[in-house]
Amino acid sequence: MKGRVFSGARPTGRQHLGNYLGAIQNYVKLQADYDCIYCVVDIHALTTIEETGSIQGNIHEMVLDWLAAGIDPQRSIIFVQSQVPQVLELHALLSMVTPLSWLLRVPTFKEKARLQPQNVNYGLVGYPVLMTADIILYKADTVPVGEDQLPHLELAREIVRRFNSIFGPTFPEPKAYLTEAPLILGTDGQQKMSKSLNNHIELAANEAETRQRVMSMVTDPQRRYRTDPGRPEICNVDHLHRLFAAPAADEAARLCRVAGIGCVEHKAELARLLNAHLEPFRQRRAELAARPGLVKEVLGEGARRVSGVAQETLREVKERMGLL
Ligand code: AMP
Ligand code: TRP
Image (spheres, rainbow, N blue to C red):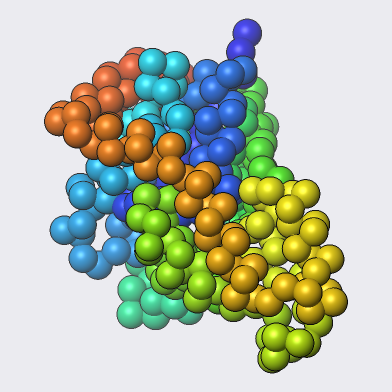
């Protein structure tokens, strides 16, 4: 029997290179060998959003990116979290077997509490419990995510172990599945690429926007003049170049070390390469965007296809927990 993949992402709108290189690449790849379910987690988004008017538009843009990147709705399921409400019931039931102390020490919770002290809501604490419910409602065993999600996956495994030991073996322990580049830094060269930090490069940006973002990238801060030798090992331009064209990146790194190539030239080369690489994606995306109703249809069909499994798992959980 094929294994089952589940992953989710918050509806942040157009996807960026970090999403693509850290997660979406694997969503596409795993379709060949697994039954795959990909979820737009709109309820998770509510833990940080105060302005909810953008959610529907963001879902649309994000799903277009997923489809254009190669997620095939004939083979995989794409759906919106809130459209299959059994996950909320499972979340409530799992919260009864999850010690609060486990949740309060999750690093992402502490970080969010620091970033939004005016909005440390109850949902933020339960974030990893809801994520666990997402995954195990479908008894998924493999979860493609970026490195930032590893603490959540670890907690999911602990919750599953605890549930299984109290109520008997019910769920597989879900394992994270990483790409070769599970943490992509942003144009600042310091922090994780992320839309909220505005240090991102969108897949669907046009050529000029992409070039402008790449040209703004921060390189080796010690390299002040064109004649200074650079340190490619600490330079994000080198890292991204390497992911798209390893042999050419080796040559650029060799030249950088002896000041044979300047940062501006190197960035122009990366921008050219990215634009060439993303051109077919952008064309597919434009074609998909021109089909009215497509995204709604895919999401409606996805929710219909998963709801039987969701109901069955919930029934089993309630039985095990003595509710039936
Ligand atoms: P998010 O947009 O934060 O919901 O993330 C969606 C997926 O992309 C998750 O699997 C993240 O781990 C992954 N991801 C987001 N940003 C990055 C990044 N800068 N590098 C690698 N993976 C990322
Ligand atoms: N927490 C994930 C993120 O911020 C999104 C997510 C929700 C998820 N549920 C999931 C990822 C289940 C993998 C599996 O990106």
